[in-house]
Length: 387
Image 1: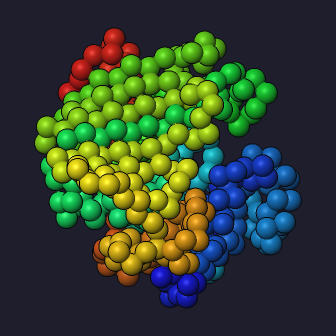
Image 2: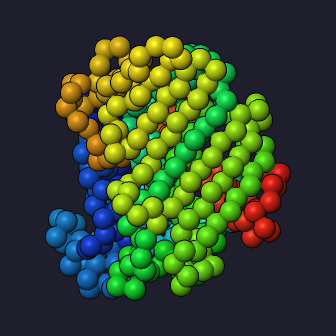
């Protein structure tokens, strides 16, 4: 049970790059980090417009002198302070992640970064090497993985309750971009610009989320080869896709699918994962995150509820309130931010951290998957060996 008592000896002095006024993702970063007293927001380069960023930071109770015009200035000035920042979250458009993350690591800072880390596996591996060299934590905000039902699924699979895993069906398919909303929405416009979004739209923006859920639930399974087809139904988005299907073969003989889409008209969110074994199946939908559907062949369906004593201890560890009370995305992010803080403190002590969290390896894996999907799709939706 999490009740707000100490998870780390002292709150980590923390800053943000991006996430300023009007940023949905910036608000959830701040809410998640500050909830359990694991971090203290002391500085920021919140906006590409320095004055607007400073005004925003002051309204967050940040010292005006520590509201910086850009991340380079912030890293340099904070390094001069005895009480300088120890960690930074990056909540900027995709095309800037690599350079900011690299600069933060070189400045000796821990990093929490929006995905993708960068646009190429080569670049992601470079960041991984640098993070290990500097002994710094890089957390990647696959926020949905912080839901407790995901941990319950992981434990059930590990304990053989599903039997041999045969099929993994994944999707993140909403409908909010079924028209060219980017024409009037700046926060969507950059997502369909290859210069800022990279080599994909929905594969990287959406598909990597359920893919990471599968990696948490099924850490023993590795992709052997895949085939991907992608479409731009809103033609102005080409060459970036707004819909894609990926089929994967795993090294244990199982098969997986990922439907990534923003043109699933009428769907609110549409992120689901279903894992099918030889004995039973589990099904999780992020619009009903407190429930895990458990289906044993020949028996009635069971709905496993968050917070109940029949769950595995690992799935109860992050409870904030008893079963029956709904927990949501903010709690899931807070669970991950707690782990990020604990991992950072452990790294500073030169110790290992013994719980999983979406770290630099998860960031590399997401970039790698997108790169392979694009390679398959752009070569005529062919099967390719996973590289």
